[in-house]
Length: 504
Image (tube, rainbow, N blue to C red; front, top):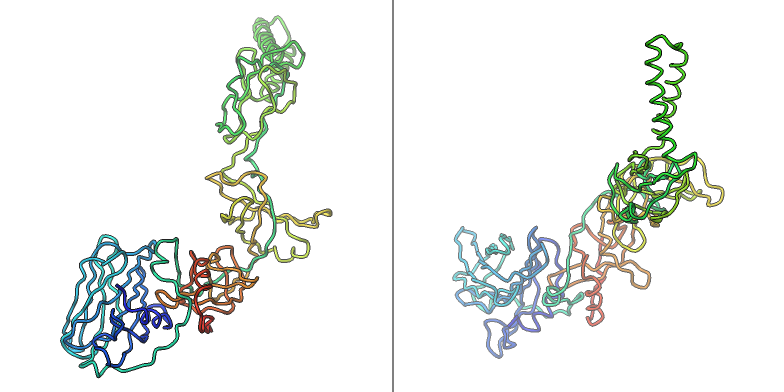
C-alpha cells in the first residue's frame, strides 16, 4: 500500500521546481498513525520529493526517519521520460552518504507494482545524509541526485508541523501512466516575427507538362488499353499513347512519308550532281526541303513506330489528368495528358495589401493545409510580386516546398505563418500545451509528481510549433503537452488552492 491518505493529501500542496526537492508535511503509517509512533503520540511531518533528469522523473513520498529504526515503506514512483511510462523492470538502490563519507544503502530488486518501488531503509546513525537513487535495469539506467535527507536520533526529535491544505490539481501517477501523457521544460528561445496569410499549393515551374498531339490520328483501342490512368506514376520518355495514321494532310504518317520522299530525292540529286548532270542549286534546294521536314518531325516530339506516332512523357511524375479514350480519333493540338512532378511544389501566398510593406524581408513560412493539422515548412522564397491584384487586393509571394512524401496535393488551400524578419527572445511553450478555456489561453504546469496548476497565459509571436509567453510561466517549469485536457478534467474534481501560482 502507498503512504496514508493524509500524506497523499498533504504532499500535493508542496511546490516543486525542476531538479529541486521541496519538503512537505504530514506522513502517517499505513494504520493512520505517524511513522514510528503509537497511539497517543504526536503526528509528525512527512516528506515528498520530485526530481527530473534527462532520462527520468522521480517522485517519492516517505515518512520522517529515526536512526536504528526500519522506515515505513517509501512510495517511490519512477517514470521514463522517453515515453512517460512506468518502470516495470530492474532494481533501485538508495544510497545514503554521510558527511564523513560513509555510505549506507538499501536495494529494491524490482518494483512492487508497475512504476512504484517500496523500499524500507534502515539508517543506523542520526545525521544529515546526501541521498542518491540509482536505477539499474533494461528499461532505465540513471543516477538521480536527490539531495539532503535528515535522520533523527529519536521520534521526539522529529519537528512537528501542522498539516496544510492541499494545493494544485491532483492527477495521480496511476492516472498519468495509462494514457498518452508528456511534459516538457520550457526555456528561452528566439522566434521570428510572422504574419498569418492564406495561400494555395501549385505545381512548381518546370515540374508540370502537358502531353498534346501535334498531329491527327486514331488512338486505336487495342494499342492503348494500357495507357497510364490518372494517378499513375510515369517516367520521362515513357510511352503515353500511340496514334495510328489517318488520311488527312496533317497526319503524322503524311509527315513521315514526306520526310522519306525528300530523303530519297536528296540521295538521287547527290548522285546526279556527282555526275555533273544537274546544277548544284537543285541539290541545295532539295537539302533545304529535307531539313525543314526533319525539323517539323522533330518539333512534333514523341517518336515514330513505322507510320504511327508515339507520344511520350517529357518528365517523370504523376498523371494529373487524361482527356482521351482508347478508340478515339485525336485531332491535331488536342491535349491528352497532364503530368505533374509533385516532389517539389510551390506555395503561393496571398498577402493583403495592408501588409505588403512587411514582406520585403520574407524568409520562409510554416503552414497547414485543409484536412490535416500537420505543419509543413517552406524555407526558400522564389519571388515576391510587384503588382497588387486589383480584384483580391493581394500581393503574391511564392516559395518552394519539398514534398518527397507527396502528402501535399496540387490545389490544396493553406493557412501560413510567413516570417517577415526580426526575431524576439523569450520564454516559449509548445503550441500543443496551450488550451483555450472561455477564450483565455491556459497551460497546465506540473508542480510536483502528482500535482498540477493552471496558468493563465499572455502570448506573443508564434512559428506554428512554439509560441512566446509574455506572462504566466517561468523558465524551467514543466508544462503538460500531451494529456493536458485530462488534467483539466481532473481540476473539475479537485479543490484548488493557489492553483494559479505566481510566475515572473
